[in-house]
Amino acid sequence: MRYHRIPDETVRRLPIYLRGLLFSSEQGQQNISSRNLADFVGVNSWQIRKDFSYFGDFGTRGVGYNVEKLAKEIKKILKLDIVQKVALVGVGNLGSALLAYPGFVIYGFDITVAFDINPKKVGRKIKNVAIEDVSNLRTLKKRKIKLAIMAVPREAAQDTAGALVKAGVKGILNFSPCYIIVPKKVKVITIDIAMDLARLPYYMPAS
Ligand code: ATP
Image (tube, rainbow, N blue to C red; front, side, top):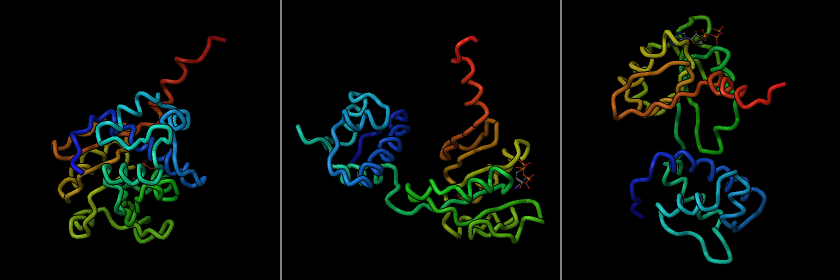
């Protein structure tokens, strides 16, 4: 099936739906209505129907969506239908925690290699992933790794991103608290946990 260009906002929600569908499938559910999926993932049912309309109509009136078929379709759109190898750069406290995090597996991500600049860390293994010297980043192209997670300090982030782009990486999940400039063909998503926390007090009732 050919897909129309899917808006970024919809792409942002697709993993949310996928996670809900995978959990429903684990619970043995074969079909799910858009209303039940909406309650489960916390998105309006009209929004779900609109999002799904970009890639065809999967629902059957009165029955809902076939959980497995829809999960498969979303995986295909997100290119998660194959195992995606991922590199990690920066194995400090955050990087080590990311290496140990089991949640990447359900989407088919496999962190196969890690890099660090600190010679004391190079050669060690965390969760069976060997830490290599950062000069080896250039081998990523040969290893066909196009995704990377960056957990380096802010001062090192731009140069590291540059080295990753040079090594053929096309997608970077950046945990450094800064804006990174990359060529247009490369996608960067920045996650700044502290910044998200910084929004919360605004919503707290005055005591
Ligand atoms: P630790 O104290 O264990 O080094 P940290 O999380 O407090 O960890 P940070 O200063 O945030 O340390 O650095 C995170 C990791 O990034 C460290 O392991 C550091 O050695 C590594 N690092 C720093 N600069 C680079 C770089 N240019 N390329 C790759 N790794 C780097």
